[in-house]
Length: 110
Image 1: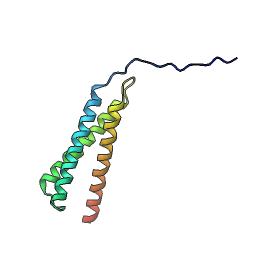
Image 2: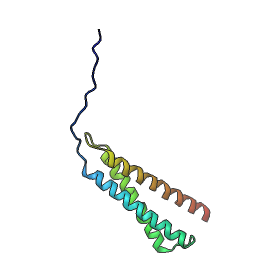
Image 3: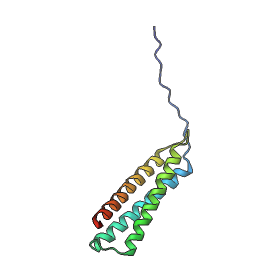
Image 4: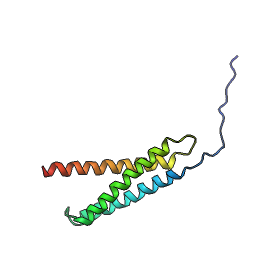
């Protein structure tokens, strides 16, 4: 007869790496800058100016850093990945949005 194997549950908590907090913080700051830049652009009916460009660039840089920090954290072994996953996904979506807007903006100028 085959012996039924019971699934074991581990109650050992995996540590939360410090980089995952940075990743999530960078993603949140990038999202706030994105919303502020987009809101200013909408209020000014598309003609934002240098302040909107500065907020947009800041958001782009924070989203790039969130993705880089998240990928580094996801390569670690035996740690809790939840914050790094959230930060990497938010940063990646922001990065995708900014690069899409950049390509659309360049194509409309040409």
